[in-house]
Length: 241
Image 1 (tube, helix red, strand yellow):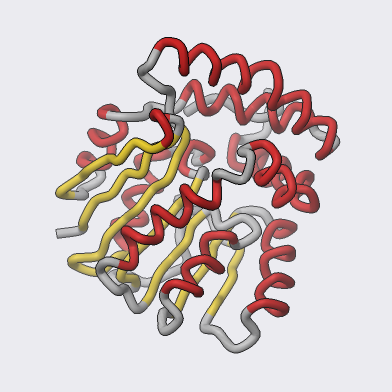
Image 2 (spheres, one colour; image 1 turned 180 degrees about the horizontal axis):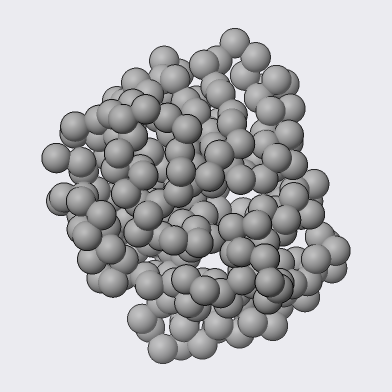
């Protein structure tokens, strides 16, 4: 995907890092406000799918401030969970939250490029990404890296925004994303371009059957999708066979 947050000469990867470094201090608040708190229910639904197979070692990519890591730590207390992200500022927030909430858990945070992961082959039982796959500079390459670090039988779970099929809901959703979200997001975070990019990246993302095809091309099998909240978001899942 060529869409970039700031339309500058820097690579998309570097611009995404800069964008999240800038908004890290307001990121959790904005997630709750802009999704009306529903984002946590979407994450919990994803984690319910993850927990069905009781993975003992999990990688959460584009972990941001660690929301998925902490929710998984509650659901799967015995699991070793790693959170990786491009943004050091986001990870700083995540590590502070981990220190306060889960001082004795097996939680690890690392700055990492999702397209060049610093982990060995066949290292994880499951991998998750929540609202982050569309920010990858090269989505197929990122999925191939995830495939590499998963063990045989390991599973991938991707939670991402999608465009509703229902005409009325689609129009309301598009209005909200184009008009309301960039204004409020920019006002609270101080970076209006970041939230304009969020809207544009959602509309640009190859959701639905197109993304299932990308998963298949990356090597994953048994690929499925589950649409939530009238198709506002979709959970994609697949298995490394």
